[in-house]
Length: 132
Image 1 (cartoon, rainbow, N blue to C red):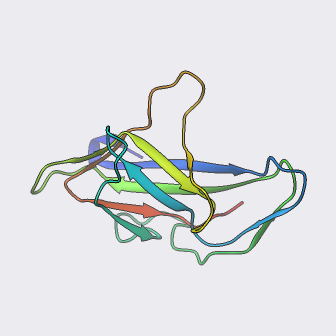
Image 2 (cartoon, rainbow, N blue to C red):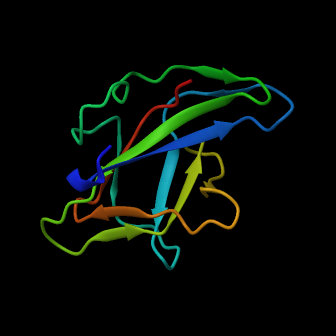
Image 3 (tube, rainbow, N blue to C red):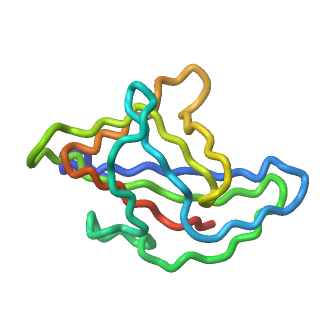
């Protein structure tokens, strides 16, 4: 997606690192944190939320059974536009497979800087359902 249009997206990958099957259905539980690691006051929407028409983003959630070592993916999408108010900038991202399970910090890799979620003044983040 073109950053020049203000449209941003990232993929999240869930890996079953356990020794037994793990079922997941629905949307990941996502929290965006500021530089002080406090939650940003933003709206998290399921699906594309009108941000963009992207293939698969509004598909209904499917039940997935992940065997050890298997993966599922989800995605985040937002627009970095400034219309009114101060910009919301997330420096950290925490995700759980579904609400009610513990969240884990999302990182790009070892020794990588924190994730940047530059929401602009929209205050909206769209989340895609888990998929293969």
